[in-house]
Length: 494
Image (cartoon, rainbow, N blue to C red):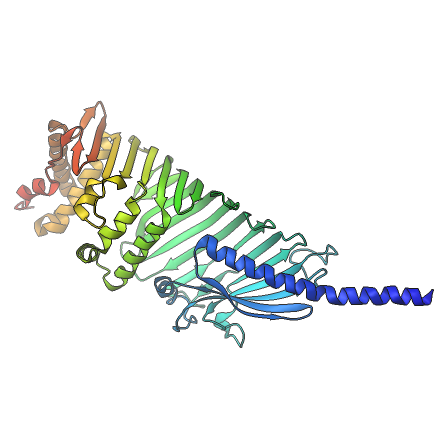
């Protein structure tokens, strides 16, 4: 009897001893597959740089290479990011093998539920291999992820990014304040179905010229990437508030509260289709309040690979030539812009903005727009005049007369004050009355030429661009410039 008991106990000891090593082998395979799946799904340079498998636990590193332009943005706020190349983010993983990992599970007491593995991952800015040695205080983990992989291969994770401020201590002109982030994600056994939720409490980015603030962002996503089927995602994003403030003017440039986006996207091969509904509670531009507002957006047949190439080229050229006008001419003369635009137009992409409504104190603004590129009209890719012929666009809108008058008068007043030293000396009420008179004259000329339609207390207009010609309310466009109306007043005296 004692011999039988000893045999059973010995067998259990051998099984319990060998099981963690077997789970460790399986865990390495799972991690390798997940890294490859993430890199392929998001088209990002993510790869495993280090893996050491032990009997009961393992360590690993994965590295995400950042584009140079993103690293340049991060560098002023994360000085511990070395300037070595390639720059990026290193994720260090501490892995505990199943079936009964010995580590503490986040948010719960020790569980006897058998699992394949538990992984604690820490994200640190740096270069390849930076997490293997000593890390300075400035490079402590910026993000931690707690992942459980179950026996059948499905996974569940919880991630946390703690609040921090840089530079620490007293506020400075250039300062980043991060208020923290947390979220959850689940992945099925095949990695084809992912659900997640995230909440970011807030972000403040201060620069010499102003401050950007973002508060209470909530995101929920449901993504499916079945084998040989179009990938689909259903995403919801709500933003509590956004504000851009100018330090020189000591006022808010613009702000928004209660912004919400619901989007459904489908990717088949390299082609993207998307539908999105946007809502906002309030919008403030300078001192003018708007809201609530809604809009519906549809995107069809967009080649995301061609678009990515176009954006990469524009961003790369922008690093050398930040001036917009010079950048445009540089891309135009080099021939890169027409060629890249031709690749985007090849799939006949189309974007439609409909059901746009925005409430103002004077009434509601209604607008819609649609743009389509006819790739079939391209005979020789890279020829800009032919690209312009491939554009088919239309737009229409209506707005309260009082709101239009106020907006145009404000622009005329701004132009006069900037261009004319005498006008800049006028008292604000006098300049505003003069700008109102000029804007009324300008709007009357548009109505007389039928570019604007006056319908009661509402201005209406429709525009169409087709075969290289712009039509407004059915007439070829030959608009008088508001600056031309300002010119006769250049000699005014106070």
